[in-house]
Amino acid sequence: MASRFETKTALVTGGSRGIGRAICELLAAQGARVAVNYRDREKEAAETVAAIEADGGQAFAIRADVADADQVSGMVREVTSTFGPIDFLVNNAGVFHLLGVGEITPENWRQTLDVNLTGTYLATWAVKDAMLERGFGRIVNLSSIGGLRPRARAIAYSVSKAGVIAFTKSCAEAWASRNVRVNAVAPGLIDTEMIGGAEPELLDKLTAETPLGRIGTPTDVASVVAFLLSEESGFMTGQTLVVCGGRVMIP
Image (cartoon, rainbow, N blue to C red; front, side, top):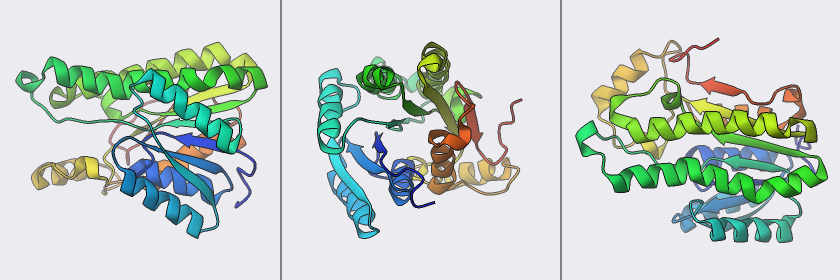
């Protein structure tokens, strides 16, 4: 398994912590060279790289705001210069705000859509031409069960994540003939910093609503991302795999 992704180069946005860090560490453990993107969490990104290198893997941290087209283009150029052509892109960077309908502002709306949806588009567009030219590419976009079962206190987030699913399907159909596969993962409640501010009563309620009876771990999501990047999923594109302990069941 250690050589599953040998010779492959992966770029993971938002890779410094939580689900992103778990993805970076798993891909590196399975042989990939990993570029760990971050925006503000330089210390955490350095810790992720150090953990990968201590385990014998190859990684480096690179700062870029995924909502800024120029920064994204520069990031892709640097990753390509350092590790070679990008084989895998994981669009993981995201923001989440739990807000009531009356609390949503234009600024909050724009930031959420800019990072979660436009950021996914910008990173994808920055790598797609090289992938199409080479006839190889694997892209996994992080959506959410919020994009499948929207909630009134996360309107902007739900809209952005539903958009990620539509974007995934559209790109998958457009590029399938060129051996560029695009899939998505929709996590449910995962034990990361993102849920750190939630009320304990809410977490208890959500856990009770989960058929498997627990909160997910970042590794639960990372393993599904790795599957979608691998040739084990070679006949899959345009799909959204739900990783939520059964809270949302779709055909």
